Image 1 (cartoon, one colour):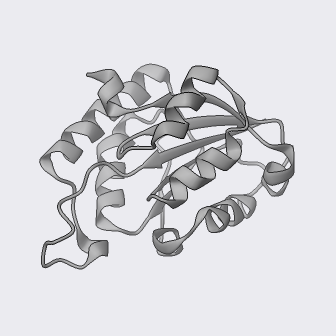
Image 2: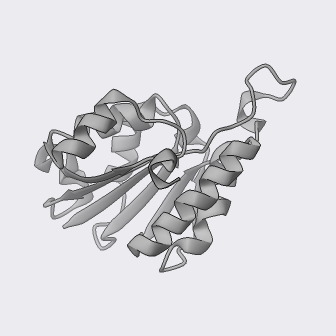
Length: 171
């Protein structure tokens, strides 16, 4: 079985700042939401074996906020390709993961994270699916389980949405 954790970066500063989009940090709310999500990750015992993170500052800042809460203390891999990837690109990246790795957390951006989550969420927790289909807000986490033997089989094997949690669900 494979487990996929899709974490959208937390709320960033406004787009109309003089900073390049890739360099925008988290807003105060985003920093607070990352801490709230870290508390959830620790309480839920989430321990991804591998963490792949967009190289954008807001994704790195989100990861910095939640990383101490991850049980296995994985060494994250920052990837430029995740910044502009679409859902198909994210799925292709997951298909490249070594089959010995049982779980991956991907920290990224919309619309790619939301589009991939919707593609994977054909089955699973009905309440979580309804909330995910409504919107995948900043800081939210979707958790999927797949019976795929290997990551290349993920698209064909499909996945079950087990959890969809937003920072506001934890307030």
